[in-house]
Image (cartoon, rainbow, N blue to C red; front, top):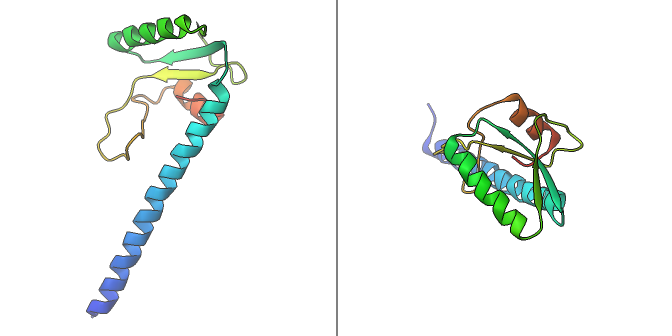
Length: 123
């Protein structure tokens, strides 16, 4: 039989481990933001690929492209993923309920999205 103090100890350890996982995700998100800022800041042309966008997503993308154009940044669509040329992968967003704030996942696991993720390219 397990006594109450042992159960309390196990519970505390689980809480500490859960907190470290959340901190780990938060740290990863911060590092990704820093990396993506380095990749995209001060660029005059952003080479992007798209993957599995809905009509509404495509309309939203066109609006973003116009906004970038107004500030002197050109968005150039690429048909194929090229690791040393592609700057951005734009794909549909998954609806997640268990993810931390600001944690976004791709709705589809397409080859373009997976290759972009592996190359460290913002999705």
